[in-house]
Length: 413
Image (cartoon, rainbow, N blue to C red):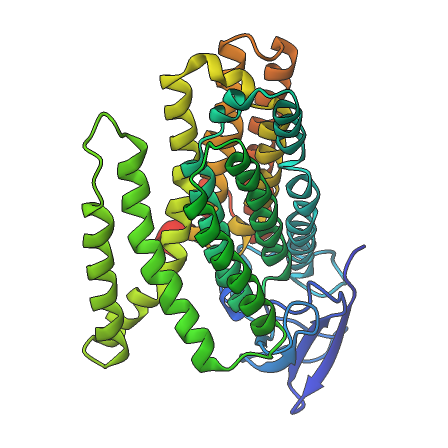
């Protein structure tokens, strides 16, 4: 549904145009600041000649976050052509921006469907193998890779809960719960050590409770900061250890990578909390948990592909439907991450789409575990979707080239 607009006059010669679309009308300053501002008028009346704004409350995305909506005015007519000869100048492109904002939010929310079903085929396949006494087949699912993905989901849940991105937070919650079920099956099959599963279960339970309390404003800032410090230290400690352990026995079995990273992480947190770091350093430490979570999530397909390389026969234990759902779920997040210019989110989603979902579909096809038509359909669908996301984002921002969106994402506007 196209957004309607209401124009109101301020101080006689300034006009504010407010879109009435519920979701799209509340946009962040960072997004609107990239839009070319446009001179606006009502009928033949006086036009805006300055920049004005209004603080609006976003009841859809957040109950805490305020957004500054700028008036549409500028001397430049290069990027915002007239919608028509008699209408308000510049509203054509602004409507396209609003519409794509709304669609990307819907895609992000729609990702809950494939993620809800993501582990279901694998869970069913694992259950069948367990009932048949074929515990060896479950070794095709590396518990280190699944654990990495679970910890990444848990850390990203905190990242999105803090940003009040409800749809993305729900996606990560589903990822945590479904992956934990798979780990329980691997533990039953003795493919995962019991002590690691017990420790993982405790962290998952505490993490879900704290994130839920924080999202609904029931958790103190001090407790949340302690949780953030915990996931930062835990992430920085676990990531290098899991990366190292993936290649055992080709490398010596050692806990040195994890313990070294743990010491560095604790020192960084202490320095940040005691004021020993600059403001830039504190921000860097604060961003570590999110980026560490993304890297853990990105390592999951690496671990899976390494297992496929070492034990090609065990690839039959993978479900092609699970891989397709992973590709679809992460792919649906790509347009939103690109639209709001979240480099970390886009990096994780794109990597998982290409290397975990599509990468394992490619492996299954190479060993004749899936049909050619299935592989071709997945390939065409993936290329078309990424192309559509780049094209529509460029149209929404009024760019001539889709590559400019990528440039803004990496280097800024």
